[in-house]
Image (cartoon, rainbow, N blue to C red):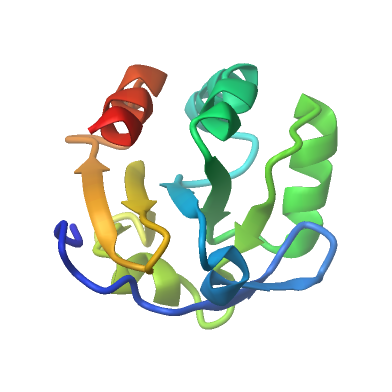
Length: 150
């Protein structure tokens, strides 16, 4: 997993609507990246629904939140609509998992991203990261709030 103090690797990925979103788009603000395995899986559904419930509080701490998985933009679009999500979902689809790998949030054995969180500060430096010990364990929102308060 990427370590605190590291310059966040740049990226440019399509969102759920096919629009390119880059790390530079968040310059000057805090960004929480949520790496998750797959849209529509039960655990991912629970995780992103949880973060949607507290999204206003995350934004009140001056941070944006974006999800990243290896699913396509089309899949992200349907997933986002089904769950009424408002955070952007970015498609690390081609080349598969390139951004997940750059952030150390990749599991070779299952060929998808791990459930991981990364807080990037206003200058583009990683301030905190968390990798779940297993993709079946959802990192609680309290971890995000603790990182934002630190």
